[in-house]
Length: 161
Image 1 (cartoon, rainbow, N blue to C red):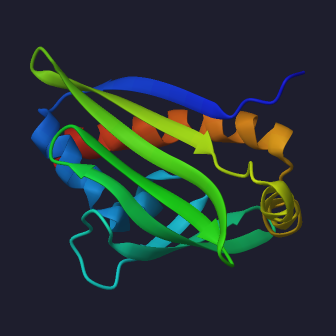
Image 2: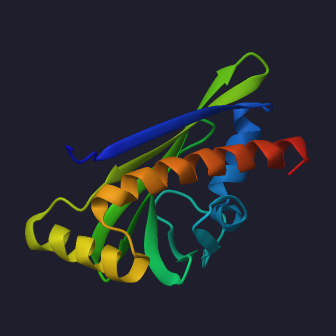
Image 3: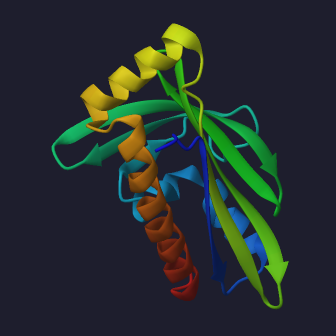
């Protein structure tokens, strides 16, 4: 089977893009929504383009951290960040927000950045050792995680934040 390098999942959320963008761009919320992310530390909130942060993750017995940088922060339209570990690029995660009626179509996307020679292979090895996931399995885990995250974002909106 050919390796997938990108993934997208979408869901409707019953709120305008500004509300959903505000929730998602507060990276500290990721620990509430993601099945793997337990918390995010942002030294100087709110996060904006160029902001750095640390994500603390867990899946079963595996625990790891990532260092991130906000790559795109277009108000009410798109929010994306790159994560890595020990200076090695791992992935770009992001969200696009499109108004549809009185709600928002939220698209979560992921792009594998472990593509560069020895650096890519080293990042793959670290992912297998620390997160317990090889690149082929990571795609399936991310797809399920994205669906859960989008559902939880919708639930947060319904509950009022």
